[in-house]
Image (cartoon, rainbow, N blue to C red; front, side):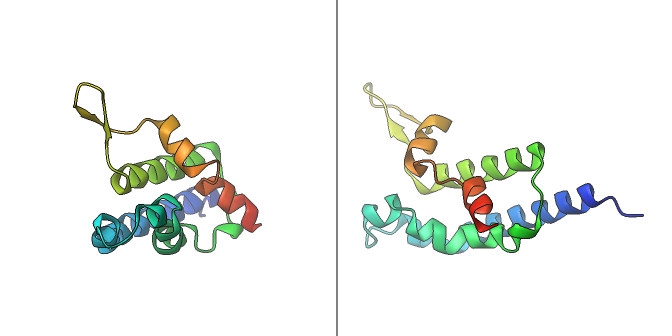
Length: 118
């Protein structure tokens, strides 16, 4: 007998893996100086190239708290890769905080996207 919670969790792990594989394919686009920062900031590249790999058929899933956490963690990790580190006043670089990532996303995170697909 298959537990539906574990099968959904396995499916989400596979989708996150697909998203992780999609990023290296698109990495040159994200780091390209030919693509405007506005296009990157509007998240059009992320929303078009990476998010669909993770959210495909997501309207059929019931998201539990641990799965929501995994999806949010995935999205923040990708956002940190896409957007450059933040320079501090003393000239050092640091990774963006979760709050800075949320500010970039402007409340349009992957969980909200999945819930709106219902």
